[in-house]
Amino acid sequence: MRKPFIAGNWKMNKTPSEAKVLAADLVNQLKDSTNKLLVAPSFTCLATVAEVVKGSNIMLGAQNMATVEQGAHTGETSVLMLKDLGVEAVILGHSERRHIYGETDAMINQKVKLAIAHGLEVLLCVGETIDEREAGKAVDVVNTQLEEGLKDVAEADLKFVTIAYEPVWAIGTGKTATPQDAQDIHLAARSKVADLYSKDAADKICIQYGGSVNASNVKELMGQPDIDGGLIGGASLTPDAFLPIANFNK
Ligand code: PEP
Image 1 (cartoon, rainbow, N blue to C red):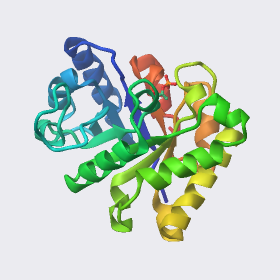
Image 2 (cartoon, rainbow, N blue to C red; image 1 turned 30 degrees about the horizontal axis):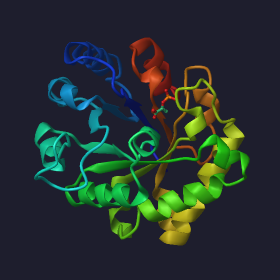
Image 3 (cartoon, rainbow, N blue to C red; image 1 turned 60 degrees about the vertical axis):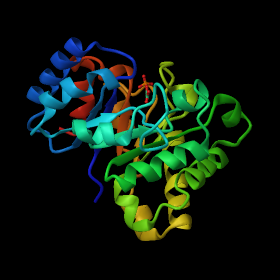
Image 4 (cartoon, helix red, strand yellow; image 1 turned 180 degrees about the vertical axis):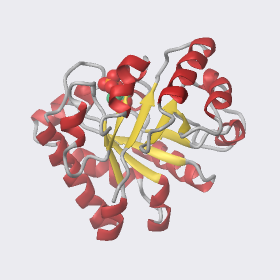
């Protein structure tokens, strides 16, 4: 049985003081939740939010990290720095990293392996653009991103990995994949994990959906057999928007 996993990606929003207030509110209001929960503030807010979520049922996530451990990489953030702050998971391969900052599958794979080597959980984001979807290539694109992103990751290490299927055209646009369209890709991604690893690995892996999830569409999306949770952007920025999503099954 896969436990529902709801994660909030705060992106480049919230100052440290604002993040502290939001995190404290969520800790307080979600203390009885049995779902797996995570918030991913920006790097500058991690230390503050770490103090707030410490000892709670909300995990601390980062939104990215460098491909290497340390050194001459101006502007980058190391896995060692994240670990030292109490970060437990990292979002990798988000479409904004791929499409705005040119991250390749090879770079994302380096990050995935480095995060796992340091015991961080990984939320590996995959998803097609609108042109790829209209060309009938959605499954191929996701399969390639999975194959490349998970290259040389051992089956035993998949316990550190969550896949987040986020169609690029649905992120921050208000357009959501229909539950059936999302389910179709989730099923295909699970089959890909079975091909790459085993049926057991495919049955166990958590696959989140992301892309304009909100209080009105969350139940139907999460009701699909292969959708195990959500990676939430815009609707993770206020308790009013996030709580109904985090509590979708209450
Ligand atoms: C995201 O950034 O991961 C995301 C899904 O954003 P939104 O919920 O705003 O579409």
